[in-house]
Each structure stands twice: as C-alpha cells, then as structure tokens.
Length: 272
Image 1: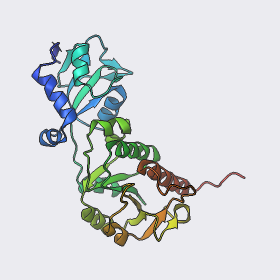
Image 2: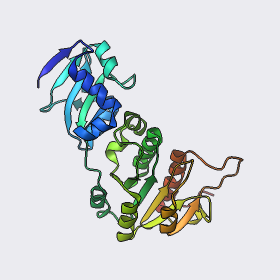
Image 3: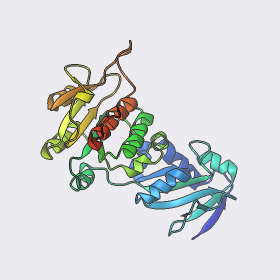
Image 4: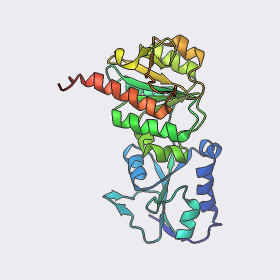
C-alpha cells in the first residue's frame, strides 16, 4: 500500500477531489464520487462499494473502530490545510475516500424486489433538494424499506449534501434512478400497488392497507405530483393537516408514511 504526503493545495490530485465534490457532471463522467467521515466510509465499504483511494490528515490513525483501510488503493496523507481544501464539510475525522459509483438502473432494484414478499417501495418524483433526498434515504434504511426509486431527478445520488444527510443510507438502500414512465411500467409489471401522497381526492393514510406490495409516491412540496402519477395510482392518500399550513417537508411526510407501513406490517396492537 503506497503512502505519500501532500502539502500543496495546488496539487492536481487535490484539485481533482475538490472538483468531484462540486461537479455532478464530473462524477457522472468518471463514475467516481467522494465520501467523507468515518461513519460514512464504513457504510460505503460495508455495502460493497469499491474504494479507489483514501486521503487522511497526517497523524490520523488508519484504523478507526476496527475499520482497516487496506487494499490495492493508495493511502495518501495530507496536511491540515490541504484537507481543508478537499473537504466539503468540517468534523469528518480527517478521512476522505474516492469510490466508484454503482449501477442505479431500474434493473438494480428488480433483483432486490424479486427476493422479498410484499415489498415496500418509496418513489420520489423530481425531488430537488439533496438534503431532503438524503434524509429520506436515511429514514428508508431505518424503516427497512426494500427500495427507493428516484424519478426525473433534479440532483444526483452522490451529491455531498445528500451523502451527509443520509448518514450513509444512500449506500445501504437499493436505489434506482429512472423516468416516471419507466417506474410506472415497472411497478405495474411487478403488481406493486401505487399509492400517491396528495391532498385532493384522497384517504387519510392510516385508513389504507399498506401491508401488501406497495409503492408510496411523493412529489415536491411546491408542485406535488404530476398528472401521470395521479392517473396511474391505485389509491390516493393524505396526511391530515390540522393547522393553517397545507403541507409538510417531503422528508417529514415520507417518514410518517414509512413508519405507518412499519406499524401495519408489524401488526402490533396498541397498548390499552
């Protein structure tokens, strides 16, 4: 395992890492992304991502909570000033890795869904803010969701804000990216019921059975879902709004609906 020390912020490799952090076009072109921090790198490795290179601040130990940074990739030590240039955020334990992206075609989740009974799928149409998408992926991992499908995306899955908000959930949850048309056809083919979250012409969410194979579909707070999803739906559900506001943050709404599915599927009675 090769070891180098970089002290110049003008180093080409350091500039490349900073560019990968900032440019989604470069991430797509090279099939690489940057992951920062002990917890996130641990999840990335545990979920089968291939690490290309590791950077660490000079003096930081390469063994963190039993995680051994060993492999065919180089480990490069950098000065604190160089690390600050590379890092997208602070407090990341002085660890940065470059990893290869995975396949996120609709076929990638098909393999997962074919192995489970009554899968639960979260579908997100045109979610713009990477922090919201990351928070949803974090909750999806915690709630045991079988797959997340991102339709007509306005951000990429390896945006550093998304990775941070997901706390590594983006690495662990089977996730596909496709068009809404492709997703609708996929769900219909696999006999997964489509529930759209919308205020109009809808049931309150706790009055609908989510124990069967189900996809819960959500849009943006500003415009909601497009007509193609409303028309494709088997049923419409809503979260009751008892105050003056008429909507919740999409990540909060998704969390409510995911854990309603957990409650129903656990089948536990309420304590008297």
